[in-house]
Structures are given as structure tokens and as C-alpha cells.
Image (cartoon, rainbow, N blue to C red; front, side, top):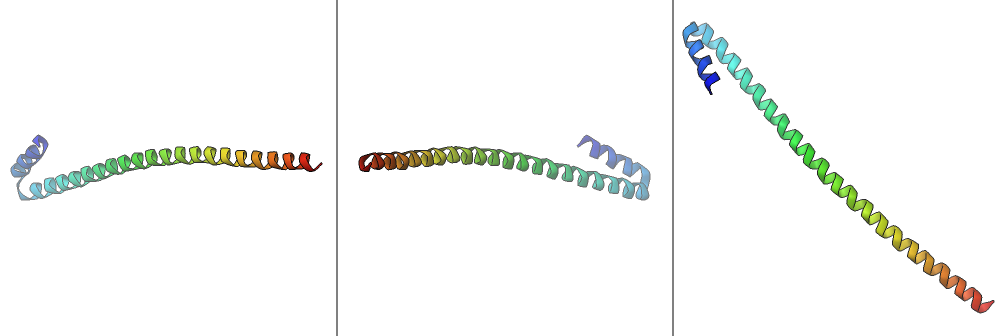
Length: 90
């Protein structure tokens, strides 16, 4: 806030034209700070989304391994049953 006070004091010393120029500068600086804050917020949101996606991807890999294991077990049981039936009827 000290910077704002310094700009206000300078604007008062410069008169009406100087006051308008400094007010425009302060307004532009404030807008730039708001833009930077918005960008920082977007970066934080993006980091959160990346973390969520990473967690989701980990869950998907885990599910793939579980389902892959189940498929291998089922195929083993089917092949084992077929071999057992073939040996019985052979």
C-alpha cells in the first residue's frame, strides 16, 4: 500500500493532468496484478488437475492388471478343463 500512497502523493503534486496519468498507471498496474493472480490460480488448478489425472491413470493401470490377471486365470481354467476333458475321453 505504500506504493499506492506514493503514487497518490505524486499525483497530487503534479496536478490534474499528472493525477490522470498516475491514476491510469495505477489502474493498469492493478489490472496486471489481477491478471497475474488469475494466472497463478489457473496454474494451481492445472497442477491439481494433473495430480487428479495422475491418480486416475494409476487407478486405470491397477484395474488393467487386475482384469488382465483375471483373464489369464480364466483362460488357464478353460485350457486346463479342456485338457482334462481331452485326457478323459482320449
